[in-house]
Image 1 (cartoon, chains in turn orange, brown):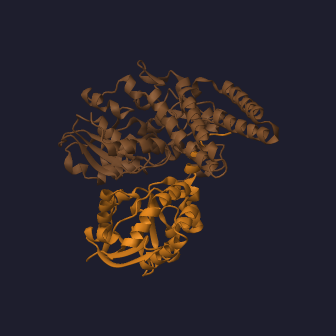
Image 2 (cartoon, one colour):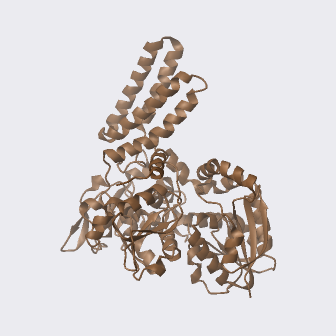
Image 3 (cartoon, chains in turn yellow, orange):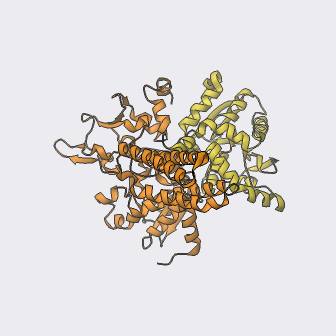
Length: 218
Length: 375
């Protein structure tokens, strides 16, 4: 018998990430991504910065919608997977092995749109605040910041159900996809705190997946 | 010393559930009354680690920067790609410590050295990092020593307390699963099975590594036959024989399992990479001694004239890869069982995570060639 079965399983997480997330979100994630890509690529040829691109699920949609994408992720393995997913289209994307906290090194106002999918929920509050402020700076005035993420639902009953399923769901998420995230309490409020103007918020899956679109004030 | 109840139940729960992540909020914490010149200590966001660090630093005024390591302890997170240069840079830049201190020096846990490249942290955010002691308990002495590590501080210990902790980690889930599985069919078996799993875990962790690998296999086979015979004699008939054989097989599997991921000691293993050997290219070594600084098993010795390191204790190496990751000259690398060199950058990129992945990326692996060209 070979050893470390559990560790091996966990280490192969990037292989299962997409399937795991699909299962955990009951397929809703692709709808959220479709809506996110629509919001981000309102104008053709938009310069889009995607932080935490992961396996490239959203990156692919952005590229198909005609955006010029800069995709960054701190994991070399995830970037590799994203490139493989995009195949020939990968050449048109600028890939950066960087953590989101390093986007302050990018030139100010150099993008039309910034997107982040299931990325902010992996960060602590102080890192999120820093990253949102940095996003507001690298996107040009009038441009958009689009956030798709796991959130704590609104309303007493939904919150109670969410709290009940949270622990088994987190355990499942970790086993299936190697994901350890904490759902955001109020992404719109965090965007406002970063100086952005929230334009719309949509929710899916009993209010546990949110898409928030905000504008960088001129 | 007062231990709060909330701490106590979390200690118990986290020891029992150590195999799963238990995240705490990343960010800046303080112990004592730190000021602008106080030391900055970085750790991962595993709740048990952070609470132990706070306890260990009692009496010291320090800042604690908690990096997002996926709720996993430092060594596992660093080796599994969850606590890397990126997470440390992100934590130092964004937690607010830069506004609180005048210096830019941080102490990292030594065991983070498998994942975090010290010099890259400096390059990316200007913080100079040093790898402190392997254990948080040694930090007060380390600071009192003007940031110097003693030999003992460098080494990972696996004493009776650590062994019992790991025994609990295995006993709790296995006892629970066995008891739960038996409950609907043979309720009377639940408690003996749970007790058996606990006893076996304790026995394994207190003594398993003291039986060398080939003998351990013989021991397992003997235990399996003995279990089958005992159960058959106790019940008689075909069902008892079947139960006995099943019990024997489970016992044999448990006894031959390699627990190297849950102990800092390595057993014999069938893993390809467990047969890798650390090698030094003396021509490249110019005595930076970062390997000596981070090796948790003290495999290296410093030599002068010429100034370089020597791998003095090959047999202690657990192939954690920390020395390979840190060496600025690429003087250290792994050679596989056939003597082929695994490039240090492969180790840096895939970490230990690689139990598996690293082998895939090695020269003989399928993806080896193409992976080498990506970045």
